Length: 497
Image (cartoon, rainbow, N blue to C red):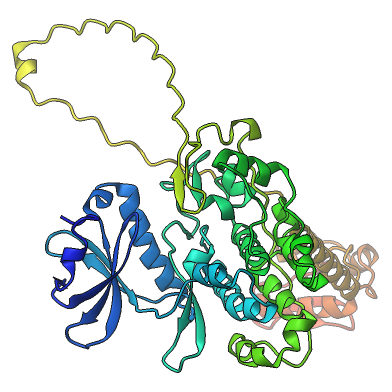
């Protein structure tokens, strides 16, 4: 049994026969985090254990698994690395991550109140780059806040900010079980208007809104929207403009003010189109790109630190079409809900309509004893849905191809007609069987019927072929055909050709 009371007693235990719990790092609403040592490799890691009561809820387990999968899929140096996930022998769910050393950005804000612009850039430029990598992997964090940004110091002592807790992330466009229409998921102070509305379509620009809130808070020590309760807070985010950042911190460059103001636009279409575009704009501010202390940060992110400005085309996102009516947005949100913790509030389910009365079943016909003993009839399985082919109109390119082929055919036909000699004249025909019927005609009559100068070449060839077949001799001078010697035919034959 693991809960808040027994979490300290777990120190010294071995999880999954390889992770020895050394000390308790923190307790949260969902579980406990321990510094641990891998028994085989001796590597120090962080092990998160899920409370038994929380693990009894399917949504909490799904959130636990989602955190591991989302972090592992991105694989960015500024996103906490997930090393293992599984169940212990006592059925306790555990998640193993790299061990981070350093405070959260929340602790730094509370300690310093306001951060200088160079420190804001040093802490948040890598986080914006990490979000860009997550968005490229089709993952929306949906809970970006100072508590989820750890100012980790690596083995060389250099600052390496880490984005943690992808438990409520939208992974690969999925998340319907955790987020349905009208449900509110995230930390209220950092939620974009579309999250408050409970839109199903939450795209990366919701994370850019949250980054805008974090930038505002780092620069001024306050949040852009302040209210006494969560319902008032949501109303201000949905209906009012944020308090002017330049009024709280007049020393800020105008370019930084414009950067934050655009990130906090209520209309997602007018925000930064992508994390990369926001990153480049932030790095292009004169006070940032000319600061020599940020050269290592620029180098790590692959940005030129020579005053040049790179323009990046942003991605185009479709605007949400499933928004909930504003008048019904926050009626189901409890007034005492925390504004600094992640919440998951679902609306009350709509009452189902009364079912219509079913008609009385018709009496079944009486069955014979033989039929009653027979095996019950098995209904065939349902047929798969038939896919209707998508009949699309022919595209312009297909029409041009068809017209081109038709023109080519016309051109080939015209060329062939020009090459054929007198295509309208009938081809000469040789009719040897007709020669016997006109054998009595005189040569003059035959010549009169067919003048000798017409198609002479073809006629001569035809006559020669006929002579070879009928065993006759062609007398060209007399234009008659005589039988060969010894032939039974003595009558000259005249061919009309």
